Amino acid sequence: MKRASIIGMALASLFVSTVALAQSADDKKWVAQCLVDNKDAKVSLEIVTSYCTCMNSQMSESETRTITEWEKANPNTRKMCEQKAGWN
Image 1 (tube, rainbow, N blue to C red):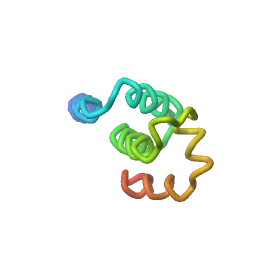
Image 2 (cartoon, rainbow, N blue to C red):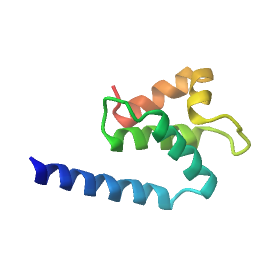
Image 3 (cartoon, rainbow, N blue to C red):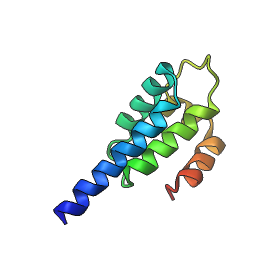
Image 4 (cartoon, one colour):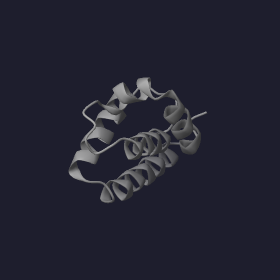
C-alpha cells in the first residue's frame, strides 16, 4: 500500500510538471491558486490539475479574477471542464 502511494505521488508529480511546461508564469500562478482552492476536493490531484488547466485555458489573458472566482460566473464552462477532467 505504501509503495502504491509513493508511485502514485511520483506519477502525479510527473503529470503536474508536464502540464506546467506548457504554461506561462501567469498561467502557472492561476493554476497553482486553483489547486490550493480545491485542496479538499475528493478527487485525485491529476483530476484537479486537469480541471484547473482546462478552466485557465478558457479564460482570456486579460482576466483578473481567479479561476475559482471566474468559474462561478461561467457555470457551463465549469461543467465542461469537470467532465473533461473526469471530476464527475
